[in-house]
Length: 465
Image (cartoon, rainbow, N blue to C red; front, side):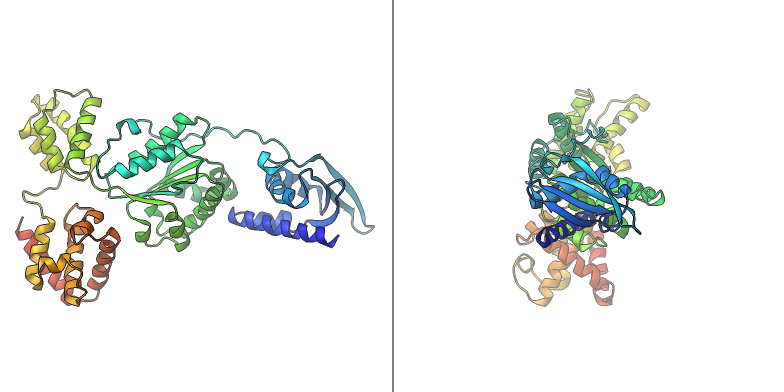
């Protein structure tokens, strides 16, 4: 008897852990902790549990039958039957046995009863953002390849979670929508949801106000693929982070797809709880770099074809926009849209003159943009080091500082992504660039001499424009 009682205690411990991870620890305290082991008939595989009232057994069977099945069957047998002894008269020690009357089938087959099918969920996807119009280039080739693999094989654990980051306008939202759209095309019954971090936070706040947090969490735990955009917006909201942690952990343990998007890498998510950062980084992390001129031109040509503008916008205009409006797909499309509007209003053909007018109105550009080479030259001049020092491996204090200042200014004065900056400065990786920028930013808060030096270098850089 004591061995079976111990098995029951083990089962309760497992159930407690599961409910805590689901953010439902209060349900364990209220509905499971009062349950007491009474007996187990090994021959009949029949387990009897004492419950204070009938409401306990009814609540558990309604809400946690699958959890009970998954937990108890491995311990007590595949054909386990449950019975509940309900105390009806405590003074005279009278009770009534309520037999469940059904076998518990394996939890992998959905528990004691076949669950009702879940209602459809609106995926909230933009169907126009798909892989058919997601133009591939050097900057997004890897992210597109991984994204397509995730969409076509959503039930595998490979690349899970998928964490995508990059500057604004590089196509992150297009990619994650394309993943969801493709997954729904291949698996129509897949429960996919795209949600922005801000909407998620608003939903959570409403759930707290209406005392429906458990329902909120339970809904998200039914998803097969959860796509969350702009998660950097959670940096200062600890309660939202904590709730998402439970949802993330549940989906991850049940091999459901999680796709996250941010404007910075997991390591740069200041204000985010460490346990979340660790989980974000445990799958695949991919940076989408700013598109180069060739990809910008290809994106423009694709938009022109989709909008039926072939022959309306000359190729020299396309190349001018691609070379000038670097780095943002959103800006590229905005220029094309504005060109059409101005052309119609002014009743004028679209040519280079009109394109230059529009670009200068919409995009903050200079005649001679600052380049990495210019930054290196001016830093070397002001700090008495050489280009070889900057690109080399010397750990001398003055050279390391000069190298860090170059990286800091390149991040702030150019549109070159961190990955490429590192590659151009001695073949370093993007994490080195990020670390260098952080060190300079932190030092600037206290070091007046450094602040003066960087202001002097910045003034020299501006004079080159």
